[in-house]
Image 1 (cartoon, rainbow over the protein chains, first blue to last red):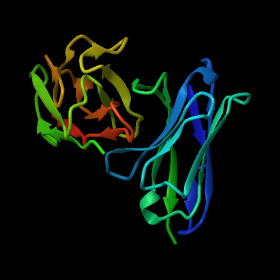
Image 2 (image 1 turned 135 degrees about the vertical axis):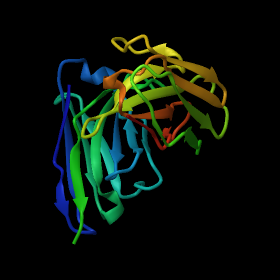
Image 3 (image 1 turned 120 degrees about the vertical axis):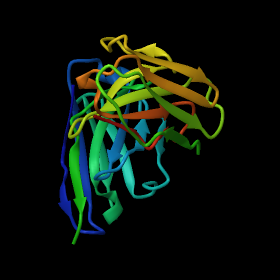
Image 4 (image 1 turned 30 degrees about the horizontal axis):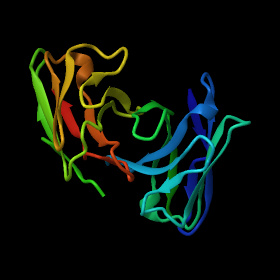
Length: 117
Length: 106
């Protein structure tokens, strides 16, 4: 399973670090993603990281502000979010993917990020 | 970026109805089409991948078809547990993109 943490209320321009703890599967053998969902809206892919962190991708909306990373020794995924904007307000899901192009087969329960003054 | 468009955005149906949801890609994606089901307050659940391959544990009343740019998700006989929002997603290229969702209501 995947369990996210680190969400909360932050002011515009502020920073937040999300974490995702994995258990029950071979963490280092899977690519991982962050997907977000703004209140009442659809799903938006945010970022992906490969098994060895050699390949990393970002959505245009977050590139330069967010940084994805992983620690295979700790079975953990992270999302460092800087220069947060109101439009970053969303539930952030940690999501597992076997290989590039494969479906997102395991989702965490999500953590809520609210950017507001 | 590949744009994904679903129709309808919402639909009303009854238990036992046959329901079809359409997803169209802005360019060809082969069969790299995935369907998810999401219930209020819950994370999405994987239903189908590769356009028509049912995920393990998903009831056989769900089926998918299509290739290239046009895809469909069909529920052959709607059950009470199926009232939810359904999303398509292309995994052909980065950035991964989702359709806007189709809400299936009673």
